[in-house]
Length: 339
Image 1 (cartoon, rainbow, N blue to C red):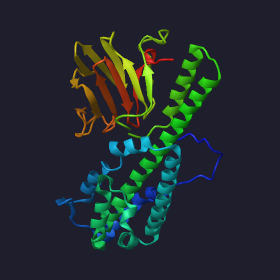
Image 2: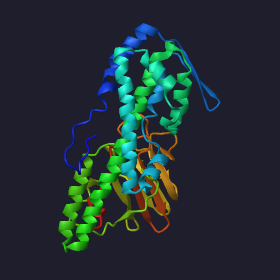
Image 3: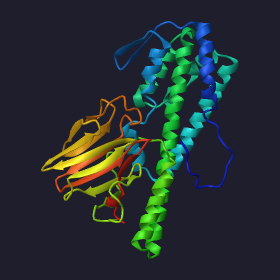
Image 4: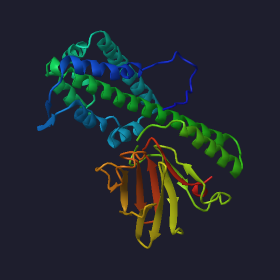
């Protein structure tokens, strides 16, 4: 994901250079060790993987940030976010160094897990338990160990990029707020500034966010009527935005690149897909995405939609609160944005 840098240029970091080499390294390990079936226990439940591809599929869902972690990150101050980013980068650099050694000596992945302090691994998605179980396995399972460490690096990178994205977006929003307090601008100028900010944040394409947020942008369909209803703009990731739907019958939107419509009829609100699927919204919080943990589960084949993509909160006062949690974004009509 491309990140905007608010500081002066520093030497480029290449944290993903070693994982790129892992594709070749995994093939080497497979030929050397000829790994058999892997069995591990996680929270008193046994898991068995006949092939490395089965294990890879199991790990692939563990590289995104869980919604609970996003909530924690969004509550942190800028100083705490900076500290977290530095700490995560230190861990990332350490693991990168260890992985670099596997190019010269494939068996070093075994000694790394044997000697690693398990608290360096997050408990999210049971990563710590997975690494602990693998550390007890022989060198016959080095290919599995390398696959696990490689995917954990992807998880770390997701957390780093999300923390940086939250911090940068917060700084951008604070800059706009400060400018609004110190100068008088007309409605069009403020709208143009906001659209420029949205375009800028499009470049920060990465993290799934809070089910609620202390900051809430008020939106109203009465504002910016010069915009066409079809003009959709991406809402800021991690910021809760409010739309008054009391006078609306429908609200077009996009989830990632997919077109949807919110239908308002009486006390019932439904999310309608372009293929005609209807998903009723409950009063209160509705988590939407491809994950089975969501209250509204979208087609799992729509891979551009995140597993936990966004939250829509419905309230009796006919307002909807939208919080985008995704890497590919959520879009609403530009004419509902309040200047």
